[in-house]
Length: 112
Length: 116
Image (tube, rainbow over all chains, first blue to last red; front, side, top):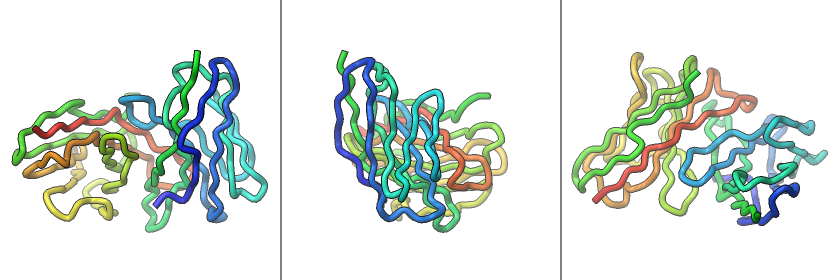
């Protein structure tokens, strides 16, 4: 079962920043926080991941709370192409499989 | 470097037929994961394979479903005697070895199976 909690949906205006929250109160010390997104009719796409420190890449930023019980994915300037379902995942290494356990995610709508 | 390749992209089968879905992982990746996404639902883990070995099949239905990842060639997800409830999008992902929290998985575009 998914170990993260996200809002079902969020809306944003184009060109504005978007902050997508995720709660993971049962996170263990070795769990990395991963974010994926799924555009309509496509496969999931890796966005970003981190352990403790905030992370930046060309797609987004990841802000991780000091106690690691929550994190926020930040899209600095939303575009219409960012409309997707965003999944926050703690990568599961139980049994040494590394499988990703997806929750329901947050459906992001971007308004022009 | 080609990404994860899945084929066919769309597959239509009549009830009772067999469906074979193929997945070629990224070059250098020897770990493959299969997921199923029913209409309007999230992705559900099915099976995790390494070359010639099934490591975790905890998400596979007990009957009619099987998976393999031979030494040569793509990974195959096989569904025998398909039923309408098997209609879904099936996604494959690959990771470099060994799997760890600090590596990302790369997904294919999926195979959309429709059972008529």
